[in-house]
Length: 33
Image (cartoon, rainbow, N blue to C red; front, top):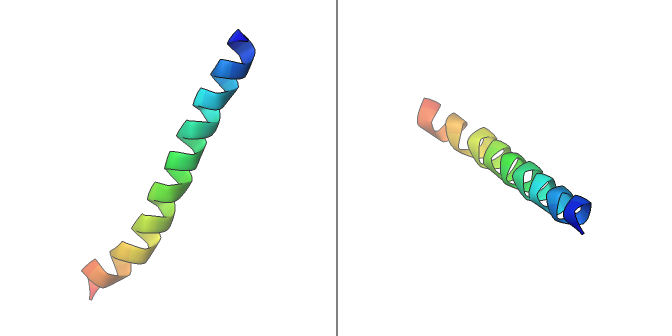
């Protein structure tokens, strides 16, 4: 149970990091313009 909960937390962090990366790559060009 503990290992599964830890994995879920890690996957949440990874998902958030990927989402932030995608948003940053799509927003930075607009800010540059």
